[in-house]
Length: 261
Image (spheres, rainbow, N blue to C red):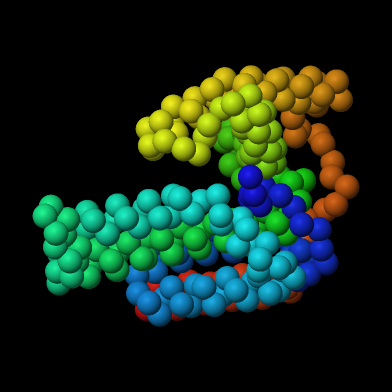
């Protein structure tokens, strides 16, 4: 299975050199912009900005597209559901109980583009930010809430570990599928319900593997005397630069443009 969310692509691009806090805030702004977009021009602006970010990251477009392949089924399914169940507008196709309107096609297209943009934006964050930097950035942003008892460090650590284990669990799923296919299991033929039933034997070994990895990680952290974020120091201190301010300004301008459009 090819999945890039949660992986880190080492590099020395402008995006790699940005402060993780700035990248997290810019990502949040872009996600808000994705949900605000409601016209062809606004989506064109979002895709143009995403493509510019990909170029700045010096990551191959093919690598980004490869990360979209695992969600293509969800994108197509969402497109079909929105196209058939969105009412209103001019009727384009009518056959028995199936009715497709221009409003349905428009809503389905925008929803599919929204999912693709969300994945691209998330990919750019994880591909250009290491798990340690991402944890430090999230913890720093949530640090003011720690004064009221909010577990900022623990939440940041859990989010970072969850992102890190996404590609690991996908690789484990791929190994289990290949092992069962070698024993005669069939995951590709039959109806949709039959394929779903064929996937059930994957869940037990996958959950066992996930719990085993979680237990090993807990033992490793305990053996290294991990006691949370209190009193801990960092090898790299986070500092915002002019590059971060420029990136935040561009993201804010894009958000304003999308809101106007």
